Image (cartoon, rainbow, N blue to C red):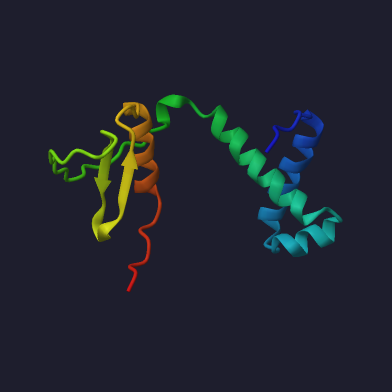
Length: 122
């Protein structure tokens, strides 16, 4: 998504609207109808405000996400192309080139750990 050009007045309007909705006890839909504002815009601005607030927080409070410990078994079973094969529980396999950068491998592991486990196939 393209980054929106920052408009301080518009952002202030939506911050006030978001606060009024929280205080009103109304659903987003009912609040938007009452205020005459677009529901999709409300949700979009709620996301934008959260992202901007997160950017302003001191970085010392943010904890880096680190992958958990995984059992690893090294076998000297070369692949045809000399690449790396990671075998996951359930029989899934990930084939990577031998030249994969360690940082990229770490990103993949973090992403896989963050995603829910797939349903077991019959």
